Amino acid sequence: MTTKYSGILEWVKQQIEDEKLKTGDKLPSIRLLAEQFQCSKNTVVKALLQLEKQHIVYAKPKSGYYVVDHFQVPITDDNDIDFLSAGPDKRIMPYEDFQHCMNQAIDHYKEQLFTYSEQQGLLSLRKELTKYLQHLQVFTKPDRLVITSGAQQALHILSVMPFPNGKKNVVIEQPTYFGMIDSLRLNQITTLEIELTMEGIDFEKLEKLFRTNDIKFFYIIPRCHNPLGHHYTNEEKKKIVALAEKYDVYIVEDDYLAELDTDSKADPLFAYEPNGRVIYVKSFSKVFLPGLRIATVVLPEKMISSFIHYKFSSDFNTSPLSQGALEIYLKNGMFQYHLESIKKLYIKKLKILIEACSLYLPNYVQFTKPKSGFYLTIFLPSHFDIDKMIYQLQEKHIYIDNASRMYLIKDKQQPAIRLSISQVNEHKIHLGIQQLATYIIEKHEKKTNNPFSFKSYH
Image (cartoon, rainbow, N blue to C red; front, side):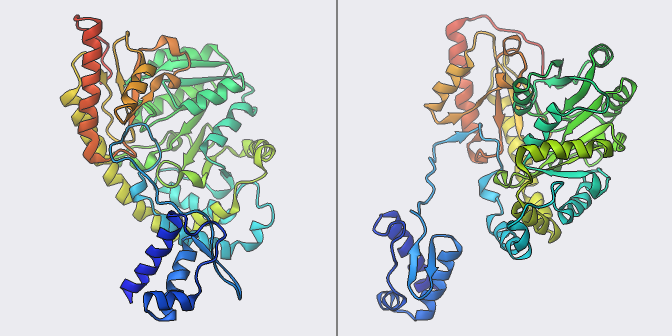
């Protein structure tokens, strides 16, 4: 039966792929398929139900089964070496598990799907998230959580809404997440920068910025920094919170990859000022499903009403179906199991990447050596044209990112590229870095034979 069942599945998919069956076409009847595959009608029905579950066909009562859409097997180029993509590794995404949760959410939240749900987010999800955040040393209550349509929405709202301190300007690390830079630019927010290297930041400069520049908040990625991979120590976090307290500055803590921190003793900044100075933003896009578009922000009580007002003007409410599915996924323990597998994989891939960079890159090229996370940044000699480099490497099926978009003032920084390990195949990392190093060496030798000496970012 298994062979016949599989044969029906493959035959239908092949017919669609070959365009012998097109969108809206009716499949042969159950009787005809049973005769064609010399099996029972029950076997045919089971196969058609599986195809329906995969959204390849649908049933019309008293009519038969029809093609939903042109089904295509995803085409991937085996030669691609992808250091560019920043979403989760597609090979370990829990699609089937989450589909079950989505189906349960449809059954459980039928009424909410046809109405506008709670503006602050489903209370049941906020309760689950409150429990989950405790594992990250974020202790709060559901009333302080607001569910947003991804972390980007939360950052955008925080950029434009008024804060209790009545201040207007923002401080960001340099470099930092390009989405935050874009929000600040688009909203014409006066933005100041504090340089970040793998050695950290200049605390004297930070204090001067806080003291003299009417700072509304300091946006910070405390661990698994994008794009450097930097991690602050607990002592540094305490100093930052103390300075924020002293000068009435809020902190927006973007803890998007907290789950990948290998240091079990590392705390978020929120742990050092949980009552309102630190606003905690947590995304699920990088460790789970980007398309889910779910994040949460933990706000001071006095800011919740204003934040919800700004969010409401943006999208009324975040999808109750996505919220309900995530709630079920958290509640049944699937998420913790998923995290265990991805953490092992990403630690392994990052280790391979650092080894490859150490082995193949020339000594005049500096690169960061993060202990965990997705990202590593490579700093190149000043004569390198990064956009041209990206284009030429693409022709070799190697994909990298220009780190210049992660700087507030692009012309000030040394040419740099960001590498991500999230979707690259671990077996291709060495080959990719070998080819990258060959490119760098060839271009550098054409330009000059003199070695360059740069400030270390190790």
